[in-house]
Image (cartoon, rainbow over all chains, first blue to last red; front, side, top):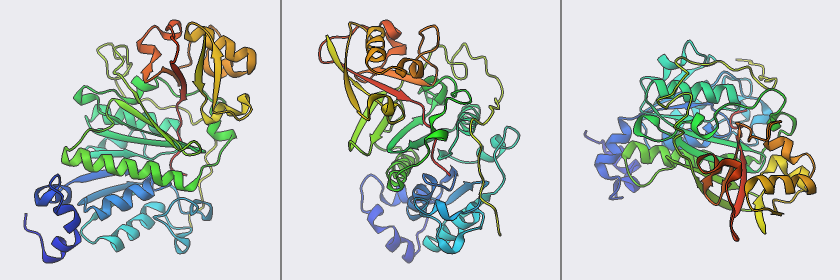
Length: 273
Length: 93
């Protein structure tokens, strides 16, 4: 591909890295990344991937920007309160980098639409905020053979890993076979999250996405990275493929998308636009 | 034998806010029972009624998931570190 003068300047700090180079930058510009959730994790991930010149970015979020989001959801700003998050994210991305084509999904993802939506992307990021959506995304990614970069957080703790069962690595169900039942989810009763923690976790997801797209380095596939912001420790534990996994093993019993009941009441912000 | 156990944020209110505690035991099962003696209510958060690990909570000995070792019968040696890692879902809203 031929870069414009402006692109050579914009991406110069990438292009001079031998691991990226002109070839890698061209690859990024031809890549398609899907981000589920333009919230705490999606905000920094979307911004860095847009800045990196990922050519096509899908942004899915069914909510609208609420003032209480702005403590951590840095892709939005005060002027965007009431706007659909996917559209707000699109505006921020387009202002940051006009090279990026943004595809917005304002509808909630469900078992009927998710596979069609994700199938055209190279890499998927999960920055959702509830277990039913995480299992839906994991299962859909498995059926569509897509690499899924998963980030989650709770209060001061963050977790990041990559699910890649089509390449011999584990899926979410290998790590945690089933979601917690209703009433046992601490995130409902003890809500709250350190805003900057979202930045740490979301940016690690973006780093891993770029590595996956460029096939460089060692990724978190087969590992779970655990960040404790209060203790300021990062720990990495192994995640193995479960030979009994209900989804991705030879003994699989799940043959289509499973819909779980939401364990908490989701209070969606009112959309004014 | 006492080993160090890392307590995740959601369970720290049961350990008086401590992120690391010590527990006595030769295997993970004994550690869980010892934790329950000192911090009542903890076992219920980790285990089903029949004593099996809940399916959304993992326990690691060093960096290995005990489900791929001998589960709660996984033996411990001096210097091992036990970590309790529950699934967390937050991210978007």
